[in-house]
Image (cartoon, rainbow, N blue to C red; front, side):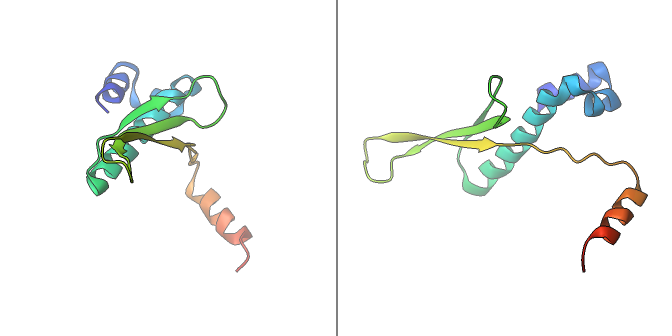
Length: 103
């Protein structure tokens, strides 16, 4: 989260939130926020990692947990995340979308 704040300070909020060159940074920030919330909910310690080679997923959230049946073993849990950004254009676009949806 701190790294994203440094990027915002250096390049500016609008540029970072809109420019495709910062897409991976935005994905990592969203993943970090998700992992922080998950950690608060279940008490586990998570780390995050980007995916650079494959198209999907965008990022991973990982942790080490106790093995469910072996007391002397641990397992790595790995959650794959695909981040979808919503592009907000205007209140009118939201109204149009609502009108198009069947009731």
